Length: 235
Image 1 (cartoon, rainbow, N blue to C red):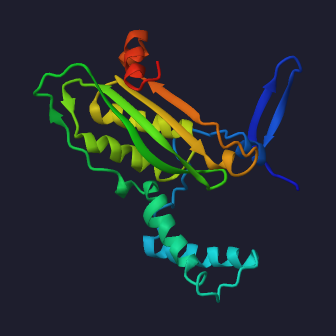
Image 2 (cartoon, rainbow, N blue to C red):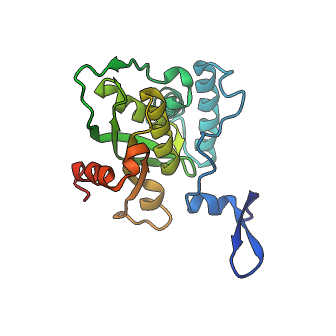
């Protein structure tokens, strides 16, 4: 099967040459292309209802190409259900209007140690194969004088997870958002996740998991990072 190539290449040491990476290589090796989710400038011109209608029609065509009989009672409503799920649920984090509204509060307790919110369950989807990524996110910050409600940490994780993702980008997007909101560099994010594109297809390894991390400000210091990991029982 012929695959197209994009403008991405890797220099091969000792050969004085570049190796072109195909679209399939990028997907199979889970290579990301940037911190920002790649969106077209016209991404939000259509209403949710218009998007649902278009996706429903296209997904119906996919099912028909696969040979499924959509006259069957069980399958007849599937295109519409999938379309609503895509727009209203699993990919709702693509739309800026769905970003959590976050209010900052004065740190009246004068609590100047790290605060850790661990074991935040999240569900996302691999942007290479559109199959689930799921796991736990652990976030921490040291207040610069402001704090946010604990549930907002969960909501921020959920917002960035609900879009096609690669785990590294998800980690950085959550961290960058927390740094901006909390007005501090002292933020840590660690994600431990399973990828169905690894366990249900390809290599089909059901035991492996992927861990990614971000350490900003004081969390780059070994003592602070070690304290954070101890709270997670990872050190």
